[in-house]
Picture 1: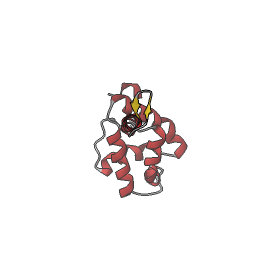
Picture 2 (picture 1 turned 45 degrees about the horizontal axis):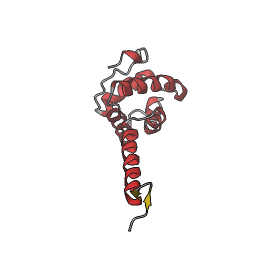
Picture 3 (picture 1 turned 90 degrees about the vertical axis):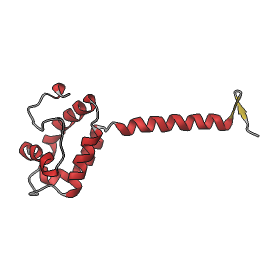
Amino acid sequence: MDKKVMGFPWSIGLGVVGLVILVATAYAVDAMTCQQAITTLMPCQPFLTGAAPAPTVPCCLAVSNVNTAATTTQARRDLCECFEKAAPGFGVKPEKAKQLPQLCGVTVPVPIDPTINCKDIQ
């Protein structure tokens, strides 16, 4: 027989806690943080800095994954601001960044342009 805590069987309480954790995890996975996006795109660094002539397959998969994660206007704005701030520190060449989606065959909803105002992104 289940032990009762505050009138509820222990197994029901544990099930509710598990459900809350599952739902919270699902929401956390939906949005990609700046650090996650940068880490995901690390295979692109050689191309973006000019050290490699073309993006690799892992790079293109990363571009696709980040693009897929940017499902809301706010997520796209946040990632835009993230990349705007991080790119100079990694030595990213703007012309290489601009070429990346096309070379990877990924259609991005936002122009890759260092002069873009991230707040204008829809």
